[in-house]
Length: 241
Image (cartoon, rainbow, N blue to C red; front, side, top):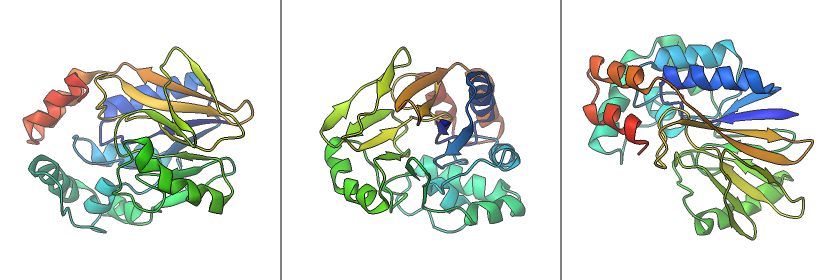
């Protein structure tokens, strides 16, 4: 089974469509979304509509939860708060309801999918030390792999340490280890590479790939400005920060 794992689309339609085109070309059997379909950028309804149309299994991210009213944006910085409230006001009612129905995590045949940690969508897993307490969750679910998002930065965290992979290489998942893997963000990368990011996982071969995709950053940024969202959100798309 070949899975395409996407995360943190954040209402960036240009990035989402470019990623989908590459996924189709790579022949993935199933797309899985780790959440934050909305927030920050200017096309929340269009991105939700596309996820729903393609029937992509999706986790509820923290911005999704705020946008649909499940949570209030306590702790959001002023820019994130402004974008979250704008998104809440602009989402159609049917998309509000759809976001409310999303789960905190999902267990698939070969892995667990989450947004932050497996039990808390607001939890950031930036380091190996952050990840360590959550390997127990994988044991309980009888899985050796968890895909997560939220940080917008790609990473591979194994039970024995941290590993790296770039778009030029493939990473073999050792059956003797458990892994937490972040495929990065499709809609708002923050690791210094402005290209959209997603992961490809071949469960039969036990191999993971990080994939980077060029998209029309200028068009996405122009939409942010035209919508009246904070200009910083447009600027950061070009910086990948």
